[in-house]
Length: 447
Image 1: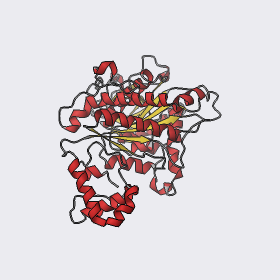
Image 2: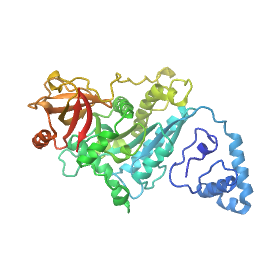
Image 3: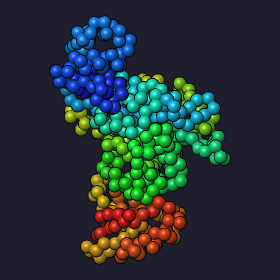
Image 4: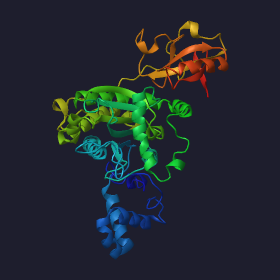
């Protein structure tokens, strides 16, 4: 079912809270031959309280309702900025479970509060689409399809974190994390990605639907690398803003902006982030996550970050001048008496698509010749000089791509030499792989 307003000149502009996506059944196109029948099918399916009334009065009643709605709606003008809110899990999938509540309930409440803030304050320019608005199970593939079909400009997946019951820090660990798509270069990032991706196993046909997706394999690492393009810069910018606001506004301990292989981020075609609000396994954090005040503060944090994102990229999307989006406090009131315009995000300095930010001259091959290196990690900013993570590694350098600093070690004149060295490097960096460089720029990968 597609959002009705998009197919009928933005019918009910700014009120598209229905889920988008799915198949063609009930989809309403401006095709006059089927128009009234499609309207009736839509209303019968999604406005159940009117079902008997519609059946009694037939297609004329459907037409009357449709025409009333169309006449009441403002004419379509500029394009809306579309944001998709994705409360994780739902239905039979509870997500992480605490002693008094669960992940699926918390994130749905936070998403609804966030959506209400967006609709109330930015509804004239921003359309909000939900992957779910009730306690229902939505497959990962459908969540991504909803965002792609909506031609969304930003995708926000909301989750709650946890750790294994055997973890000695289970009851004390706390803080927020925000993820963008990338390579899970630490065991902790991999564990989070595995837990969130595991929902696909609840689907009967998951082995077919997600065939070939293995976030633990080198091949998937390479796919993730290749899927990182210009949209990753914007994802990282927004992730950083959300992370800062969750710390400032909601008092969550900052645990970092990270990268990992989440399927739902991999399959979406717009800037996307996955937010881990806090750890439900910590009793104090769980009480906060379960409280109305906590949910409002968490939603407000994401909203304020979204305002900054909209102030940075909104006008380019909607195609006209927009009034600045303003921050709000946890009670939903405009911060600082309505004068607190959300600051624009800090744009990264323009970078070549694959050329290095900084490469030691000794690491460059003679002009025009290929060189093989071993990529070991990607970071959001350069590591400090003398970083322990790079200790004792030969010929370390990094190149800048997709807003990330990608570190390599070694410099080899053949793939055979690089593969031999890779075995040793993987003892320390299990997910390392070989990249091919020319004149300091990456030109490919060695599978």
